[in-house]
Each structure stands twice: as C-alpha cells, then as structure tokens.
Image 1: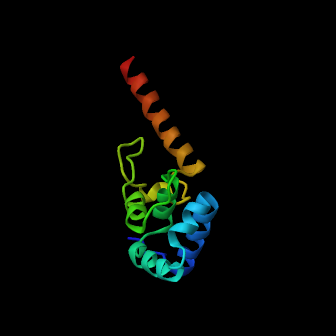
Image 2: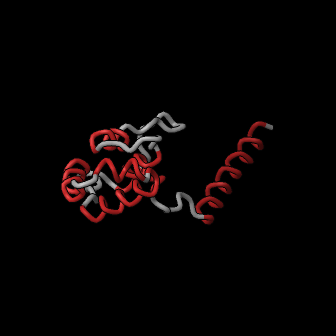
Image 3: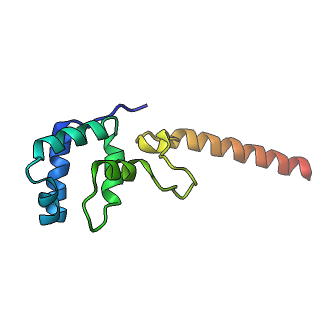
Length: 122
C-alpha cells in the first residue's frame, strides 16, 4: 500500500492551482486564514497519494471545494472500463508481460501442438 505524499508544500502547490482556476472565489474563501487553511488541508488530506489528488483535481467544478469536499473527490473514484475502482499494480508499472522471445517460443509450441493434432486426425 502506498503511503501518502501530502505535506504543506503539496497543499501550497494545490492552493496555487486553485488560485489559477478559481481566481477571486478562491482568494476570498481563504483570505486572512491562509496559513490556517494550509494546516487544516494538510491534516485532512494526509495519507492521500499523488494519484488520488489527481483524481480529485479532475473532478473539480465551478466552485472551489472545502477540504472535506476535496477529500471526497479524491477518494470517490469512478469505476473504470473493467468495473474496478482502482488501477491494478500491473498496469501502473512499465514491466513487459511478454518478451518477444517468450512470445515466439509459446507461439511455436502452440503451432507444433496444432500440427501434431492435425496429423493425428488424418
């Protein structure tokens, strides 16, 4: 299981993104409580991974979220085309499942077996 990456630097970067996206709506929402907001958001989002934060960012709408709202966006992932609400580890890693040599060996073995069945059927 991945550990969270959220710290105050991540939240500061997130707030800059919110400022760019929402402008006055965001700056007015945290006006005068900027440092307290960073602290609260860091506590609320602790344990999240970068992937989860990206999911939350992809779900933003026209109004800036509160920390609990953003947490829900990050955690309530839609199911993918396979009906899963997560990405299996094998798809996250860039590890080849088959090498060309292994694929060729498997193909030749299958071909030999098929040829043998054909000759036995005649």
